[in-house]
Length: 154
Image (cartoon, rainbow, N blue to C red; front, top):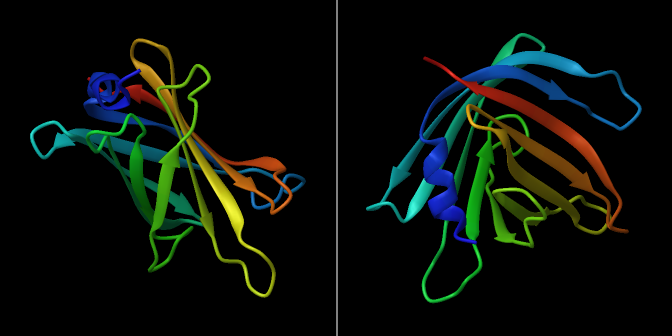
């Protein structure tokens, strides 16, 4: 599967609902989200810029996905004003299991061990896609943290 080629189908402007869970048992926090998807560096990278809000305060994020030659895996970098602050998360691909791309990174959680973060871009119908983000405990247990559901803007 060529994830970057598959991501070219997402080029355009998108909008929809964003859902955030701080913990698996906490109430969902909802806001509106927009996304702009474009290609960069002569089509070698896909850039997903998105906006959302937490407690009424605007937030923004950026996901850059690429396929460095000659490897077959996908590398990505993710930043988000709320989730990552002034840091970025380097991600590596994993088997997509029905998704366009599935990415995994880790972040420091002192004083304990690092935690994981998984980002999945999934397309179920022609003019819609979802960005799913999972928090992963040091023991490997995943919990859905973000679900952004996008439909193409006309």
